[in-house]
Length: 214
Image (cartoon, rainbow, N blue to C red; front, side):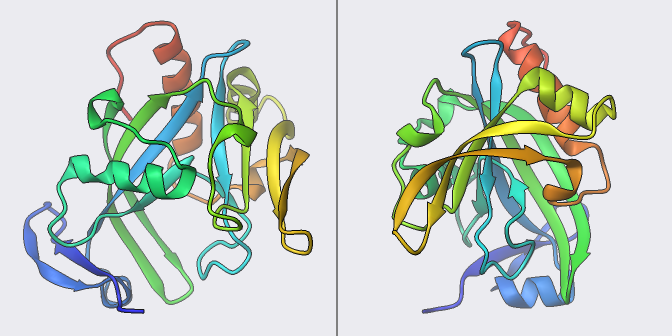
């Protein structure tokens, strides 16, 4: 498989050229990605989290963004909807996304230096986790956490909450229902209160607030 080519930037978001994603991560070049957070308005509202595959090089088995991925070299911001389609089988018009702005992701995972401009959006969908269309095994799990539980967890009011959804079982090659008791250690670590802010934005969004930003 050919290595993925991405655009690289300096810290001021000035385009510098292109590189393979592996090269960019090794050198600490800034690259760009899309973060699409799916908000389900049912009951009092849920946020969907994808469970990363056990074979991922970075943060295997961790819970993270509903759908996310890196922009290929030359892609425009609106082209990021490709990731939602590829991961969740959901055809989305870019105009349906609610922009929250650009989040800066900074960190290190093993030998990978994480420097990313993350174009962050909310997307409203009433589909339950089992109703999305996956390539078998491509997504290892998709769970929902209620907005109130998410706010309680990431504000420190509670240490654990329940997540409900589906999980891929390699032995049977099927998705099965799953109920998970999760704590903050099961999410990809970030230096800012990112997940807390996403739950805050999800609550404001469902309350018809239009002034939203990450």
